Image (cartoon, rainbow, N blue to C red; front, side):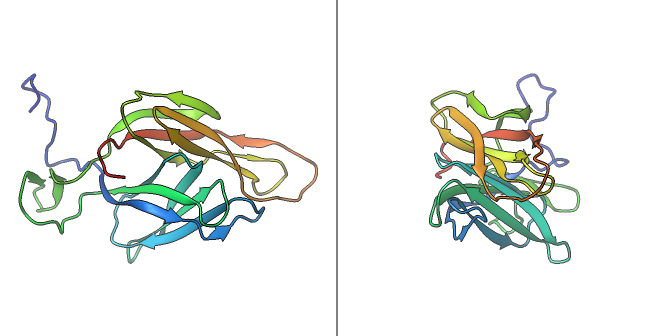
Length: 208
């Protein structure tokens, strides 16, 4: 219970997302347009994953359900830079049930874990909807990551897209800008755009 004696901070009805994997991956595939690159990988056993990217490299990540039967999810990170570009990432999901049973833990009526004090949880600092390329400023004493909830892009022709909006983090400054992905032929020239929607996440002391 919080200090007001009324608000419940943790209970058995809601499971906040926790870090289930984090690290650095090197891109291994050049983009169709060349100059930039990406990496794709899969994970199984996840329920409601979100992927966030961090660090000074301009990058964007997306996840999708590959196989509902096996619970396999695919993840793709696109980055500004050639093959071998280093990309920091974090995957958040429901707290796994396989951790050792000690410490502060909360379970629902079916025995499913809804909270485990040994995990690092999703700490949302800000949610930006329909945000344009530019900079966002937060407290300089913390470390941040960005989850791209909606893929921002711009299309110069009738089909496909050329550029996606990626993020980079330096101190308390988050920069959003375009990364060139592919060249799409088409006529007549036409500009279609979609703004990004993002979560800004505090990952201070997460060890990334």
